[in-house]
Image 1: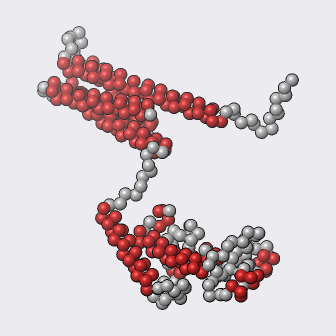
Image 2 (image 1 turned 90 degrees about the vertical axis):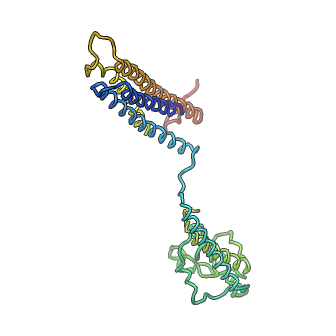
Image 3 (image 1 turned 30 degrees about the vertical axis):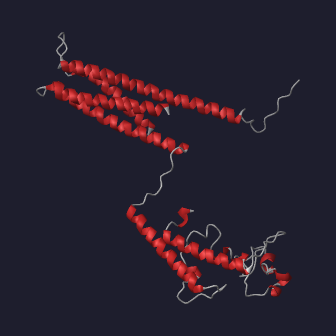
Length: 220
Length: 94
């Protein structure tokens, strides 16, 4: 820290000296002569160099403080108009999501309506990176429409077909809906249908919020 | 950025030297005559700028050297002895 302060002090004193030279040339100069011109030019140059030095040292100090963690990294500053617009869009999307939820009612699993976009056509809202989107979590939730008794091994869904594993290749991913990836000796617990409904609703709300805020993966 | 700042301070030092020498180099101060007001101002401010620039450079370099000493001391305290090279034989105690 000492060297930054020293540099700033030297630059500040240089700025004072350059300014004083300009003032002296104007006050004591009288008629323009070589002396006045030399003093004026040198004072202006010293003042300019001192201003540049001040900027350089302050920038260097800021960089150092940022790398040390004293200063926060630069964040995207949004204008008030942009912030207002994004707040409005967020509110509108929240209302839309609430209406959609109210229209769907308490049905546990509704077939997709024709107006609703397909699951694959939805924009990527950053949930994929968290493992909460698409088919990445589908294998955790059994299909409530299939009775438990129909699953082989007393409710455990079928794992990868033996042909794939016999060839030494990876099992197909994602597994079929209601299935579960092979997990060795510690199988994952299968959540209930209520949990599946909750997860789906939460995901719909989160997706609409993230799409409205426009933050995407940067927010995470 | 630090180097640029140091270069600017060196320029201030050089400008101070120039100011001290300018009245005699440009010859607006006649030799063997009393100094005019402009000469006195130039030499005084030039000397001050030269001292400032020189002191600034020395202080910046000293600060950098002090930081290097502190870094070396912190590294030694954190790591202790330097790591043994692979394949080195242990020293036998008699």
